[in-house]
Image (cartoon, rainbow, N blue to C red; front, side, top):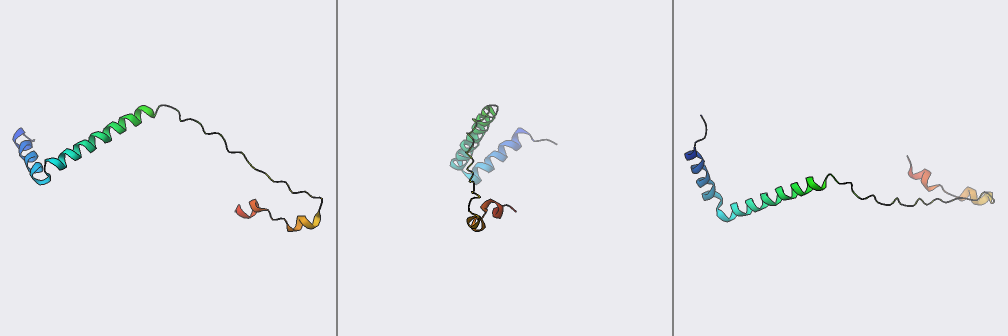
Amino acid sequence: MGLSTTHLIIFLVIIVVIFGTKKLRNIGSDLGGAVKGFKDGMKDGGEKPPEAPAAPVHTRQVSTAAPAAAKETIDVEAKTKH
C-alpha cells in the first residue's frame, strides 16, 4: 500500500489550492537559501577560527609602607570571588 503517482498529484493540487503558488514559491526559496547556508557552513566549519589576542591582565600592588592606608584598602577581587 504505497503512494501512487495519482495520489501525489492530488496531494500537490490540494497543497497549491490551500497555500497558493506565491506562498509555495517563497517557501521554496527560503528552503533553498537554508540549504545553501548549511552547505557553506559545513564547508567553512573545517577551517580553524582566527585566534583573538589575549586581553592584558591588569594587576595592582598595594604598598606596605603605610600601615594606616593598608587598613583602608579594600581587596575588590576578594569581594567579587565567592
